[in-house]
Length: 217
Image (cartoon, rainbow, N blue to C red; front, side):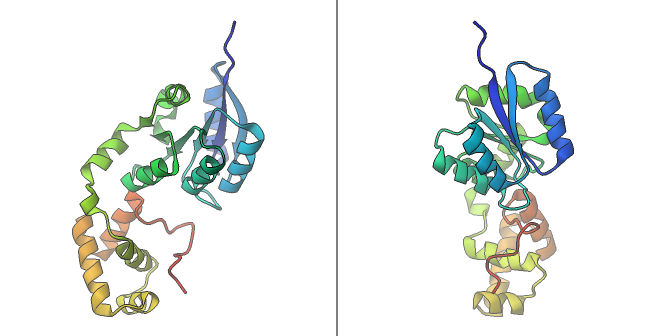
């Protein structure tokens, strides 16, 4: 008796990428693509409708981000299997995804070589973490992660605000802002504040391109 195919939902806002994933899945009868969502809210809605065995979720989406979508799905369906499929190797992105309930984290560059095996493993109850991401997590000790207040300062700096404006927004002095920036650069091993912002974006410590900072008045 032939086993039922593993049902899959993909979530990504790039049509070409969705087509590529669909093409890979279509070549193997072990899988059945049941839904394609293009934003986070649609992913939650489609999950309710189709209850896929495994969901492939991008992080950067037009409305709610993929990590928030994972959390929403897992709150309603605690046993949902979700694999983050992204271009971002950042350790913080991966840690946030795992805390939200992701069962796997892999890079889009590996879809043709590893995606089907990863889906099988996650469906079977095993966790998958891309080796490059695992190495990144191992290199970044908790002591080197900025505090919540430092992240607030860094987000506002990334939005182009100077020390005086950051102080006004967070109701702290300019001297305190300078101390936070010094600590941030030390933790991230950054040469200057611009370098710190670049490193923080790459690691997923801050995520500003798709939303305004919640700390702005």
